[in-house]
Every structure is written in C-alpha cells, then in structure tokens.
Image 1 (cartoon, rainbow over the protein chains, first blue to last red):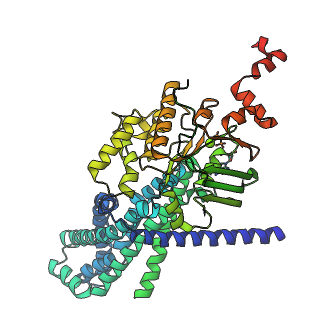
Image 2: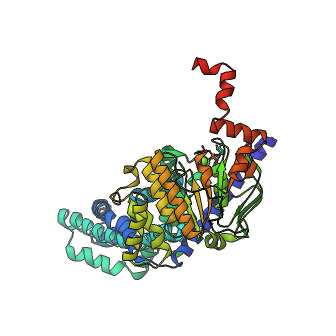
Image 3: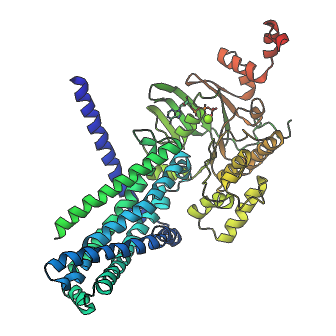
Length: 262
Length: 276
Ligand SMILES: Nc1ncnc2c1ncn2[C@@H]1O[C@H](COP(=O)(O)OP(=O)(O)OP(=O)(O)O)[C@@H](O)[C@H]1O
Ligand SMILES: [Mg+2]
C-alpha cells in the first residue's frame, strides 16, 4: 500500500517536473528569438528545410485530400439533391480543419522528427555543452531559428494545402461528376467567410509553434529521458516519442481552438 | 625531450589571485559517489595539471569548473564568482573567457573544420568574414591542419579532431583554458608540438590552464601544480618536483607506477619480471 502511494507520488512529481521543464523551454525559446545578435540567414535556412522542402509532400497530400473530399462530398450531397454545395463543403472542411491539421501532421513526420533527432544527437555528443561553454546560447543559436521557421512555414504550407485541395475537389466534382463550375465556386464564395480563414490561420500558427517546441524540447532534454536517452537507440526512441506526442498535441489543440473560436 | 622549458620558472605572468576555487565539492551520480570533497585552487596565469586513474572523475571536475554540472555540496568559484549563484547570464559572462577542449573534442559534426573553428568568432564577435578567415587559417596552420578545412569531423582521425578542438578553444584568446586530455591519441612528435605550442601561446596570452592528462611525466614540464585525484578527493596538489618526491602513499604509488622508476625493481623482486 505504501509502495503504491509512493509510486503515485513519484509519477506525479515526474509529470509535474516534465511539464515545468517543457514550459520553461518554451519561454527560453521565445526569449531566444528576441536575444541579439539577430541573424536572418539561419532562419531562412530553417524555413527552407521545414517549409520549402515539405512543399512536394503538401502538394501531394493536399491534392488527394481535396479529391477524396470531392468524391465523398458528391455522393453524400447527391442523396439530398444538393450537389451545388460541393464547393462550400470541400472548402470549409479544408480551410477550417483538414488543411491545418494534415499539414501539421505531415510536417511533424518530415521536419519534427528531424529536429528532434538533430538536437538529440547534439546533446548526446556534448555539442550542446560545447556551445554553452563558448557562451553561445543554444536557445538563440539553435532553437530560435527553428521556432521562427515553424511559425512562418506552417501557415504558408497550409495555404498551399487548401488551394491545392480545393482544386482537387474541383477536378473530381466538376471534371468527373459534372457539377457545374459556377456552382462549385459560387457556393464557396458565399459560405467561406473571413472567420473561417482566420481559424485556419490561428491553427496553423499554433501548430507550427507546437511541433517545433515539442520536437526541440524532446531532443534537448534527451539526457533526462526516464527510459534512458543513450546512444543511437535513445535518439530513435525519443524521436518516435516526439512524433507521437506532437501529433496528439496537434489534435488536442485543434479541438480546443475550434471550441474556443466557433 | 626538453625542447619546451620548464614552466615552474616565473616566466609566465604570475599572480597569486585565485582564478578557480573548488571548496569541498561533492558529487554523486545515482549511488556512485564520484567526488567526496574536492578542494582545489588554480592561480591566475598558472597551469594546473590533474592526473589520476581512468574513471576517477577528472572530467567531472572540469565539468564543475565549466558550470555544466552542479555540485551536490560545496562551491565552485571562477574569478571569484560562485557558479551556482550567478544565474544564466552571469555564467555566460564567465564563460566568455573560457577555451575548452572536451575529452571527445565535441566538434559540431554537421559543420566542416573551418566552420567549427570559425563559429566562436562568428557568434561572439563582429569580425568581418575576411578577418575570420585569416584568424582561422592562422590557428589551423598552428595545428598543422591546413588542407583539411573542408573536411567534416567524421572524416578526421582521432588526433586531428583533438587538434581542431584545440584550435577552436584558442581562437578567441581565452583567459582560462580547459584541456581534457589534449594529447591522447597523438603521436609523440605531435604531442611535443602541442606542448610547445601551448607553452608559446600561454606566454603570449598569459592564460590560466587546467589540463587533464595521462601523459606522465612529460606533462609535468608544463605544470605549475600537479594534483592527483583518487578516491574522490585530491590527494596532493604540489609543484611537479615536490609531487614526485611526495611521501603520501597514494601519490607514491601513482608516481612509481606511472614513472616506472621502482616498478621494475618491485617486479623483479616478486619474480614477475622473468616470466614476462
Ligand atoms: N553523467 C554521468 N552520469 C553518471 N555517471 C557519470 C556521469 N559522468 C561521469 N560519471 C561517472 O563518474 C566517474 C568519473 O568519470 P570521468 O569521466 O570524470 O572519469 P575520468 O577521470 O575523466 O576518466 P578518464 O581518464 O578515463 O577520462 C565514472 O565512473 C563515470 O561512470
Ligand atoms: Mg575524462
């Protein structure tokens, strides 16, 4: 019984400690953004890595998501004889939900895992210690460019996803099933309002921050992992954890933001 | 063997101000008690050499001095500042004056040799790219590394990595250098070269040095003080001459073992020598 209580106690303490650490990490990362010297080149490099190099994946997933929405939407709407709403159905689900969420999930798979592994390996081979001993703030030097890049890249990628998705829906709805093009776009114009776009934008900004934060913090605190963050295996396990955790976080925050903004 | 002069002569800038002070530093990792009350003082402009068997905690002492590890008990002072109390910014201010060579060199493995050495200059100074280039090339030339600028750490030999680490540690004209096994993995002539270079740069820059080394007795020629770490405490901290003559049993055993003076006669006595 006592042992059980003790276990609960240590578990709770461990979770609190981890949460506190993650929170502090975010604050320091944000402070890192505002610490001089400011350098543009590292940010551009990260935008290139997180953003530009994800474009192809985003184009691909965006197109297919839009197409499948067109397909599903058409069959559902036809039952009610309202194929004319296809455009607004596709656009609304993309702009408000699927665009930001799927973009974030794809970027987590591509860049989140890479960020976590990179920083984790730097931690493991004392490169982060070396930075600190040179009085170079790792939050400013390593984390800040990644965070900025995440916040810049995600909304842009999401916008691409949305546009390509809408085109994919058009292809299926208009091209395949003969919905009138005018109805497709007219429905979209009349039903998508600024609030919807705003919600998508807020989501993608938050997801950009979330995914860089979690991936970077997991890598940075690799040596404190309870299951042992040692060596190649430690890095791979922690990277997997980071991907799972940030995916879950994206879905949870998606719900929270939706419920707040609706 | 003595191309580099003994430094116990006061040709290095002398100072009786302590640059680093460890008082009663204790550290345990899990159940293992690594340091049990380490006391050490390094004076400004002087060279302290820490010796001791592998796994005794020499690197852990250096990490305490760097502020990378917090002591469980005791204080670490650098330039009079308690590293536990100065906070992040204060720690950075102290670390500005450090030049560090880690035992594993800790090079940035996704940067080439040139960028590794240039990083402190790029991030901490406002030098132009031309100045950086000439400064880095000069340091690489000193370390006999010209021609390897474009290589990545993974493409270097162990000794080359050490030398890149040394170049990086010295590039910003530090006030204190920490070298964790600077010559391990180097051949004799290279390590003599490093010692000569160390002596020369110390005379130029007058830095304080903390060196961990297994290169006994050669490293004694550089030392102003030699400290032996064993069983979690500093057994003795003396000038090299006094150290070699110390009567402290642990020190005697260490000296005999590493310098091989009496080892051979002991072995003969026990009849081991014939068998080998
Ligand atoms: N982060 C750590 N976690 C747990 N134990 C550690 C840690 N760092 C060092 N140790 C332990 O502390 C002891 C001293 O290690 P240290 O690296 O300081 O030895 P050393 O004297 O530098 O040896 P060597 O001459 O081989 O480099 C070792 O037994 C090691 O296992
Ligand atoms: Mg060591």
